Image (tube, rainbow, N blue to C red; front, side, top):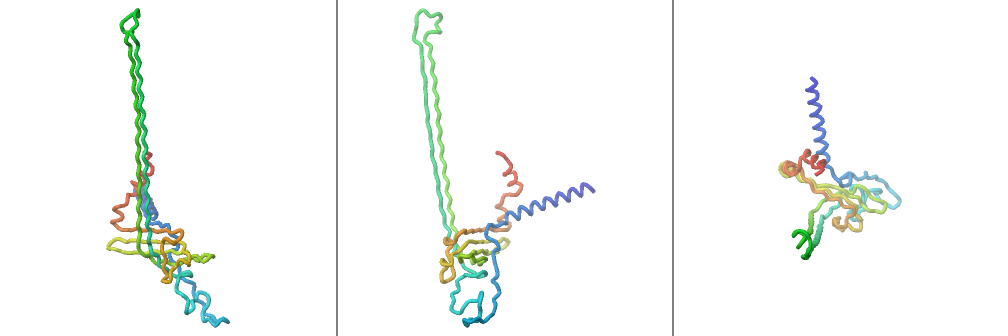
Amino acid sequence: MRPIFRTQTGCALLLLALSACSTLQQGTAVHQPMTARPAPRVAAVDGSGSIYTGQGRSLFEDRRARYVGDTITVNLVEKTAAAKSSNASADRNGSLSAGSPNITGLPGKFLNKIGVEAEAANTFAGKGAAAANNTFTGTVTVTVIEVYNNGNLLVSGEKQVAINQGEEFIRFSGVINPDSVSAANTVQSTQVADARVEYKASGYMDEAQTMGWLQRFFLNVMPF
C-alpha cells in the first residue's frame, strides 16, 4: 500500500502545482474589486424641499459619474512607439620589425643578418537596435469603486467576450479627474492616471501559444 499512497500523494502535489501555475497566469494587475454596487438610497424630507437626499440625484443634475457604483465609458486610444539603436567600433593595428647588419669577425654565419618581425591586429565592432510599437483602440465601460477626498474617481472594470471555445478579457482601471469626463459620460484613456490595461485570452488557442510550466521552470533555473 505504500507505493500506491506515495503515487497518490505525488499526483496531488503535481495537481496543486499546476493549479498554482494556472492561478498565477490568470492573475491581474488592475485595481480590485472590478465592480461595486452603489449605496442604497435613503428617502427623507428635509427643509430644502428635496424628496431624496444622500446618493439621490436631482431631476436636473447631469448623469456624469461621480458616486460609487456609477459607470463611465473609457475610450481606449493607447499608442506608444519607442526605438533605440547603438553602434560602436574599434580598430587597432601594430607592427614591429628589427634586423642586424652584417658584422665581420662574428663567429658563425647565423649571427649575421638576424631579423625579427611581429604584427598584431585587434578589431571590435558592435551594433544593437531595439524597437517597440503598441496600439490599442476600443471602448470599455468601468465602474466607480472609490471616491477620493479630492473628488477623483477610482474606476475598474472588465469586458469578457466568448468566441467559440475561447474567451477574451479586456480589463481597465485607473484614477479619473471628474473635470475630464465629457457630457456624454466618457473619458479618454490618455487622461486617466495610474491606468492599467490588460488584454488576455483563455482557451486552447491561447494554451498552444503558452510555454509549458516545466519548460519555464528549467528556463529560470538554468545558468546558461
